[in-house]
Length: 191
Image (cartoon, rainbow, N blue to C red; front, side, top):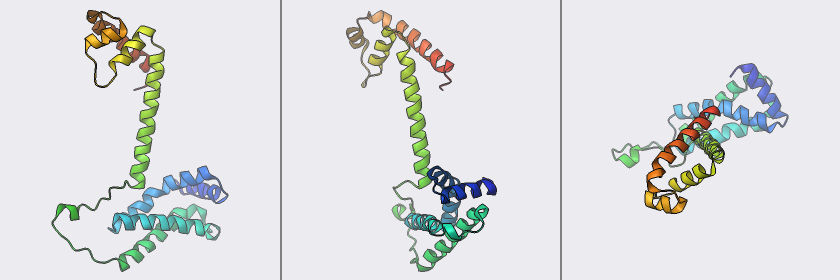
């Protein structure tokens, strides 16, 4: 992100624009995390540094004279917080036990949480588009596909009983329905 863009976001955020705050945090969070991790702090300490750096930014909104350099200000604040924690941290005893060497927290980092949320939103959007496309199929296809998608998968005899279709026609009808569904999804740009 360009300095000018960061400065504009900071000015808008300082004026109370919540969307600008969100965008500013999204833009600068990787910087704060990369600095905290470069000090090889524990996950808990990295989270503490992250929270403290952002808290100090909020505390100093009116004191930052050069909004275009808010990234540098935040980086410097993050380094200072890392040094404070690193000085007070007890030395870690190295052990060769795998549980000790695995320093990852079971909690996702903020970046992982954002990525997972975006993946989940994308998955939901795709599912919504899929079911909208299914609704545009004929009633026979809708009924057949809904029965076939149950869990655990039904036998063809069960599908026949549920849909009233002959067992021998289920496969060919399913193929035609899926081909039409695929075409609808392609038309709509869903992959």
